[in-house]
Image (cartoon, rainbow, N blue to C red; front, side):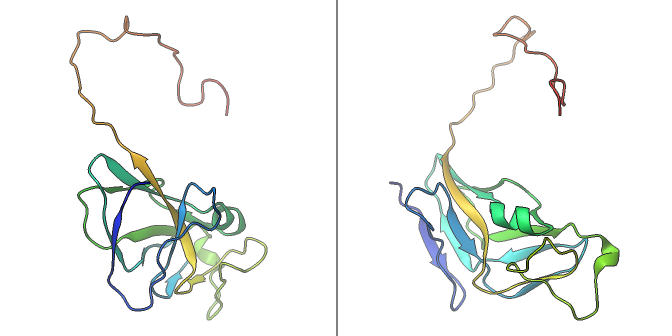
Length: 163
């Protein structure tokens, strides 16, 4: 187990937690109510700052239930919290609903059924992403004249083996 230090900088913030004993990621919650209109990208504050040990990163990953049941997507996925970053963690989230799907005064929530299009209200305390601690080895780049004879070139890329 690796110690990661957390500073809570807002009142009433939920600390990240493992929902189940064998989960790879800790759920992280919104620190305040946030409205996300169709086509909009917002930063959802978490009220948390981290001190991550050197040689590690925290990856910010989507929660599969949000991706499956809503048009909300993490914009930078996976996101990286570097070991040297000490500001508040914000979750970049985009509402991929068509811009013409907004209805005045109507908000969907994370527990709305049916992958509804339109404006979403993320409530304070709701789980919005998951955090995974990962070891990050440092690279040493070695300049060569050609890489063609190093290992094997599988070729292709960009869907060459199918979609």
